[in-house]
Image (cartoon, rainbow, N blue to C red):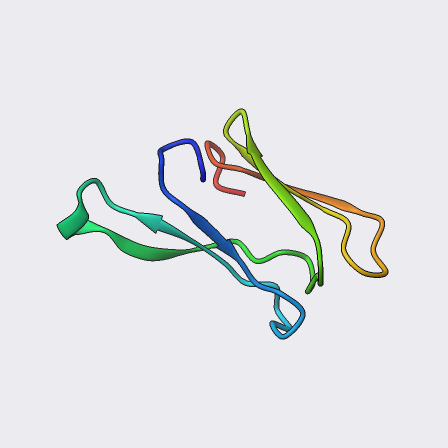
Length: 75
């Protein structure tokens, strides 16, 4: 869950471009999926958390890196 109470969905190992989307809008009838900037690559079996307006993605099979998405800056 991201800071506005909506959900973000992050791609997995079958997703070669590492796509990410978030459920946007202000009411149930106005909700829609919007693209977020893609991860730097696909990750399999990674961990993620929403903290202080950021989505943090870390690890994954064979990866020892961390990626951060800042909701305020949109990157």
